[in-house]
Image (tube, rainbow, N blue to C red; front, side, top):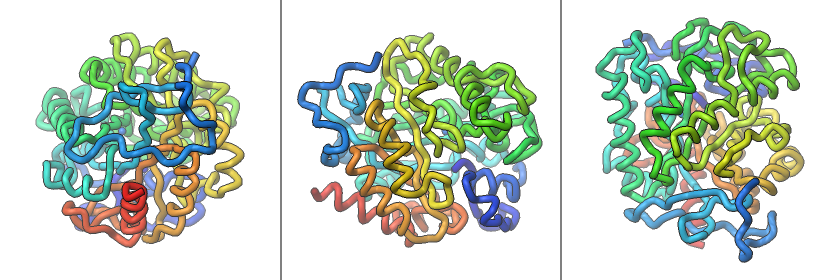
Length: 405
């Protein structure tokens, strides 16, 4: 999802039609209507691993208060340093992608120990943190108070806090530079103030080189290379979109030079960082059909597929999950980096989570933000003490049931 939702007294009112939402990100539609005023060869599977599709849900990655696990890929699983399978169940913590570039700080709402403790009470073991490349890179149009070293230090401190509480941190490149006004455009600005179809070569490669240098050696941090690619919409075809996704460069319909997934993997690995890398598919990370055939080369064989699933996406039915997503799960770890629904209930995510549990796939719900309206957010909580919305209550109940066995 990709940007702030309904934030009282700050955001303009937005009415988003069902047509706009079908097959597209809520965040992209919301970005178009309402942006805040200016002020995210495989290793051999262990011999004890069970056959794909017959795995029971794994235990939590770490007990609350423990040290976050050091992760790597083994076959189609995430495992810790002892080879124990790890399944992530977490939340997305939005704000760090937009607050800084809008001149409002770094975080949207509480981000200290009390707020993290509230997450632990939901049995959360992973938090995805969306980032803004202009803020991290300290580009000239961002307020210096919220950019460069100041932004980086705030993110480092938050990651340290999460890890110290046994929580894996997923860092996601969410908003990037690049002028784009084609299909599904979120804004007309070349600045990193909305979601773009693909990351820009000018800033994104430097961004990931810097992030990887910052967190290399800490494998309790996962790198999610780009939030929600939609190159196929921008270029006009599925074939050209997936080509752009992998190789970047000059892509039809995109005015800026694109950083393809291979170049971003190369940027991370050039630093010596061996962290697990997530790569979202096409159509806002909802389409994984060509993920395996387009998988970038990785000398560390440490890649996972990122999949996003909302009730308004094209692949929102069990038959599609079985046909499209299960085939990827059979080969590499799949992390559903965002799941959710826009009706303030949990009617969509409950069967989705049961399906993902049956596949031993990880998932995180959008979003742990108290100022998102669950109809347009969707928001899991009404306050940072962890009181759930109706939608959030369904998610919390499911995580607690998993933890109870």
